Every structure is written in structure tokens, then in C-alpha cells.
Amino acid sequence: MNTLSVYSLLDLVIRRDVILAMRRRADVLTTLIFFVLVVSLFPLAVGSEMDMLRKMAPGVVWVAALLASMLSLGRMFSADFQDGTLEQMMLVPQSLSMMVLGKIAAHWMLSGLPLVLIAPVLGLQFDMSGDALLVLVISLLIGTPVLSMIGAFGAALTLGLRGGGVLVSLLVLPLCVPVLIFGTGAVTAVTGGVSAAPNLALLGAFLLMSLLFTPWVSALALRISME
Amino acid sequence: MLEVTGLACARGEHQLFAGLSFALTGGELLQVQGENGSGKTTLLRTLCGYIQPSAGEIRWHGKSLRELDDEYYANIVYLGHANAIKDELNALENLRISSALSGWAVSDSVAIAALRRMGLRGRETFPVKVLSQGQRRRVALARLLISKASLWILDEPLAALDVNAVGLMQEILGEHLGNHGMVVFTTHQTLEVAGVATRLLKLS
Image (cartoon, rainbow over all chains, first blue to last red; front, side, top):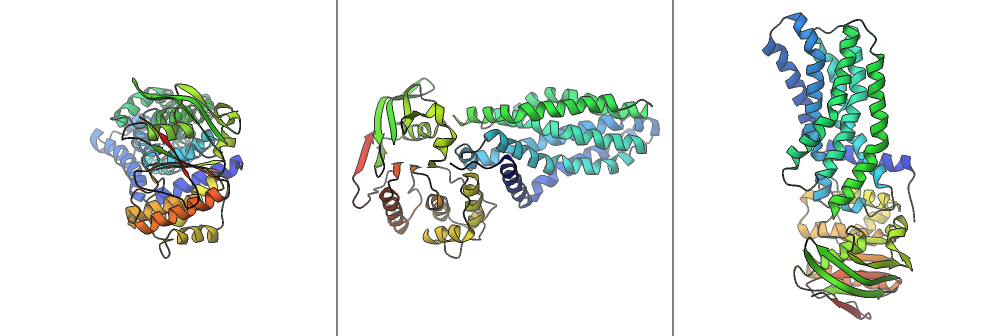
């Protein structure tokens, strides 16, 4: 019997998923390009009224981030499910929840983090102020991992089902609504001259809650879908 | 030692088998036989713990499977229909990751030796996607060589293998049984290990 420490297990799973994604870069770029395109289309379609753009900026960026993260959910477990590596992961003397957490972390690094990094550039198109941009980045930094974690739960539940892609959106989007509300709320607060701290604190609470429950629940869902 | 008593399994409404009992001790080879759809794969997956049996019990060294978990998983290796190798990685990386996950990280030289024994000399660092079906199966089988598990559960291990590889598998199984290992397998081909009587389990 040889159980790895939590740290080396996470390291192993994250490294594996990142290497796999780097050998298939198109998938990672799709999410990012989708995000950039959706956000950039709004100023073109709505016109150049600065006031309106400034007002809608946080909502547009957050909705685009939410949809972009939905786009990449299908890949989180399905490739491993199809080639049999997922069932092998259940047969090793390691914690499945921790392996799921590693996969979530890798998924966020590949589909959430790039969005966070590019968001300030996109925010400039909406003439956002420096403060607003900073809060937008912070809210995305706290919020996108929550989207990955809730998404992992949905992806695990719908694994191997026909039409799983649509089903996972139906399942996950309603659960992501609070993240969306407090994420955009933080930016709106700071542009309105109020502190963004309460909104960010609530986002942080969501992050901790999902960190505690989603890896465990997703692991249970994966075991069910193996039957 | 693996003991199965009164095992029953159903898929949906359909009862696949019931009242199945057998025991397996070190050095024994058990072949599960049956027609297509008779529940061979279901039985093997039940032994792995993927499927909860509708009745009966599986015991490993006297302890029920429900209580064991990690202790049991450290002692089995399962090879299913899927090869469980990633197309984007090369054979060596595949072996390195699966052995690290199982908790027995092996050095590259051991992994390369296992791949060479499986007849993949010169292919160790090729991406798996350029290998043929038979070669992929050989990569999957190389996992057996570096595993320290005592119970091997093999579902159609000979699928896509050529005559030489089948001979090699017989040899590898013989060594494992010689070390007091246990093997449960299904196959539609003939697989006999010299000096070991194959026990048969018929599902109908």
C-alpha cells in the first residue's frame, strides 16, 4: 500500500492535465478566443456611447466568462472517461476527491486563468476606470475557480449521457447565478463609489464552500457514472 | 486470497448471474467463460468495485470489500476493454503516470525495460496515437510488468495481439503465478500457461 501525500498527488494530476492540454492547444485557445470575441462584439454592436458601455462592462465580461467556462466543461472528464484512464484513477489507492480537485485546478489554470489575465485589456474597450478594472480582475480571480468547481460537479453527473453538453449547461448555469450577481455587483459597487469588499467577501465565501464540497460530490458522481 | 460467495448481479431488470461462488488463492489462474452478454465483463468490474453486486459478498484475505478500499486497490490491477492510455502522451509517459498514481513510481529504466520486453523497442517515446491497435495493447499490458499488485483482473487481454505477443503474455502470466500471484481473465482465444491448470468459471 502506497498512498501519495495530498501535495504530490495534486502536483501529479495537475501536471498530467496541463501536459495533455499543451499537446492539444486548440482546445485551450477556443475558450479564450470565444471570450475575447464575445466581449469585443458588444462595443461594436451597441455603439460608442461611453456611459452605456461603462455601465454594461462588468455584466458583459462576466456573462462571457460564464459562457466560456461552460464551453470547456465537456472536456473535463469525458476524454479520460472514453479512453479508460478515468476508471483506472478509481482503482488506485489514492483519494478520488483529491484527484478531482487536481483536475479542477488544471481546468481552471487552462480555461479560467487566461480569461482573468486578458480581462483588463478587454475592459479598456468599455472605457472602464482603473479601480473598476482592478476589482473586475479580483472578482474574476475569485469567481472563475467557483465556476470550474460547480462545472466539475455538473460534468461528473452528466458523464456518458447522450446530449450531456446541453444538460450540463441547464444544470450548472442556475447554480452559477450567485457568482455572476456578486461578481458584477463588486464592479458596479466600485464604479458607484461604494466599497466592493462585501461582494468580494461573499464571492470568497462561495469559493471556500465549493472548495470544501464540490471535489467530494463530484467524486461521488463519477463513481455513480462508472456503474 | 479472493473469496466470492453467492454473488448476483443485475443490469437494469435483467439478471446476469446469481449464486456465484468461487475462491482464488496465490498461484491460481481463473478463466471466466460465457457467451457474449453473459456478464463476464460485469463480473470483472464487480470484482474491481465499480459495480455494486445485488447480492453476495467479495472478500479479500477474509475482509469484505466494502471495508477495504485503498488496501484492496493497492493489490489489484485491472485491464479493461479500453487501454487506459492517453493518445497525446508517449508510451513512457503513460507508464510513468499510471505507476506514479498507483503509488509505485518506477524509474525510467524499469519502464523502458518493461516496454522493450513487450516488443516496443524504439517506440518508447513515440506518441501513442501513431502506434497500431496491437502496439497500444502492448503498452497497456506493460503496466502489468511494473505493477506490484498480486491480483490481476484482465478483460480480453489478448484483443488485437499477434501470435508472438500471445506467447509473451503466457510467459508473463506464468511468472506472475509463479510469484504466488492470482489472475482472473476472460478471453475468446486460447490462453494456457505451462505448468498451471486453468480453472474455469462458466457463466450462462
